[in-house]
Every structure is written in C-alpha cells, then in structure tokens.
Length: 398
Image (cartoon, rainbow, N blue to C red):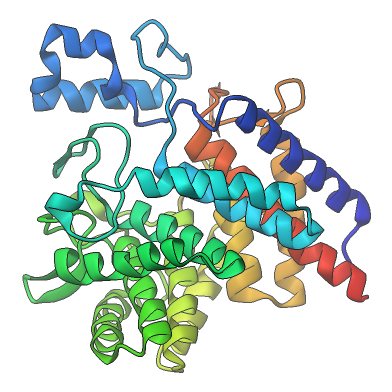
C-alpha cells in the first residue's frame, strides 16, 4: 500500500504546478524555442542553417535563461497544452471536480484552433510554435510532426469521449489519416512512419507512437487497412530491437544512443497498440524491453538515468515517462514500489519548493533551473496527476 504522505505531497505539488501554469495562461519558454528570438530574426542570421543550429543548442544547453535579452516571447506549445489536458482529465477522474473539465475544454478548443494549415496537410495535425533546426533537417514553425500530433489527438479523444464532443473526436481520428497518408515511408528496405513529412530518418519512438495511434483509431473505426499498416510498421521496430531488449534512438549515425524516456515511449506505445489490435504478437518485445528498461535506467535510490550508460542529466521528462512506463507497462507490485521511489527521489532532487516548479536538469557539475513549461512542468503535472489517480483509487480499494 502506498504511504499516504507520498500521495499527499505529490497531489499538492501537482496542484501547485497546475496553478502556476494557469497563472501564466499555460504559456512559457521551451528548451528549443531560441529561434523565436526577435533579435536573431532582425539580424537575418536566422536564414543560415549552421547559425540556427548553434543558436538553438546554445539556448537549450545554457543554464542561464537569456531569452528575455534575446527577445524570445513566452508562448503556448501545442504538445504542452495536450499534456495539460491529459493531466486535467486525470484530476477530473480522481476528484469529479468539473473545474478541471472546464479548464480542459478551453485548452482543447485552443488546440483545435492551432492545427497546422489544413490547405496544405488536409487532415488534423500539429507542430511546434518555433522553428526547429536539427542535424538532419530543418522544421519551420507550424510544420506538423508525429509526436505532437499523437499527443494532441490522444488528449482530444479522451476529452471528447467524456463530453461526447464530436468535434474533438473527429479531429483526433483525422490525425490518423494524416499519419497514414503523409508520414508512411518506405526507405532503404525499411517501413516506418516518419517524424515529419518528407523526412527519411527512421526514429523508433516516433514511428511506434504513430503506429499505436493509427492502431487505436483502426480499432474504433473498424478500419482493417489502418490496422494492417500499423502492424507492419510496428514489426519493423521490433525487428530492429537488440537481443538484450534495447533500442537505439534511430537509424542515422548520430542516433546510435540508448536513452530512458524514448525507450519508455516505445514500450508505452507498444502496449497501446497491443491492446488496440488485440494481439499477443508484441508480448516478447515488450517483455524484453521492459526488463532492459528496469535494469538500465534506475539507480538503487530511485534516480531515473537519462542514458543506459550515463545517469546525467537527471531530467523531469525522464521521471515523468518512468511513472507512465512503470505503471502502464509493468503494473506489478515491484514496479509500483519502484515508481513510488522514483517520485520521492524526483521531489527531493528536482522540485524547487520556493518556486513551486521542477528544475529542468541536474548535470554532473551544475543545475539548470530554467522554467520550461512544455518539457518540464507539463510533463511533471501530467505524470503526477496520473500517479495520484492510480494510487488513490488503489488506496481506496484497499
């Protein structure tokens, strides 16, 4: 049984995270928003790829927040808003307080208004509120990506189901058509869903989350083509899984690392797809992956490691995904006990009592306390709201 003090503390912190975010109208900074700098844009240097990449990485890695100096505005992030909606739904289900539902409706209606240009993309889909320069590609603001789209669709569907809101559900189902028609990729002998339209990099967490959502929509709409396509894509990532249960991030040379929260993404997505497709075909992959996950991404005292071979940075995003992975994929008593240890450790190491927020990251030689709404606080709130409802219902049953 859960120690009630843990549950009381995590419930209190989740409430404070929500209140703080709400007071900012759910707007804020993001680790990757530096290209929104009006100062950079005024110089014209934002048109040079190497400058964009260096500028973005500097903003992401600097422990000093210079965004005001660089004139980077606080903004809402569609994925962050989706995470808040999902957390509000957890709190509503835990408390039956309609205030949570009311807030979720307002955010969902905003999310509908922020879809990527339908004249270009045809179906419901979402991107980030900033330009994003990666080593392999450049993604302009608003161009849809698979991860943001899946989280937005999940949030809209869950809320639409509660409210019987057809507009929310229709948009969520439409996103599966976007994934099928705009992201399905066959390249170098591999079949997968791309991260963004036109990109050829095979990234496992992106492909698996896309497949999981397509499988879910297929199960609700009885669409056999969608179900078969999702299955084909999932098998490609299962085939790429190492014999020890691990996945590298993706197929490119610079993707050959193994980290915790993307491994958790993979496992959660596989579990969602398994349930939607009503199959046991993924059981071995999930089992091996989960054993690897538990054996390689947790220290004895509950710290969630970022990489399989390096604890640092200690990051709330990794903690949040650990909560979901342990309770959704594992769900055994030992997994619950580890999850409680993870939450206690995260509160001790990462929670800033005076600021009522979580730190972004603890690195080996310094701590970065910048308040990142989407990456840190939204994930913190959603995961703790889920944790609280999971264990409160269990506590009441016992």
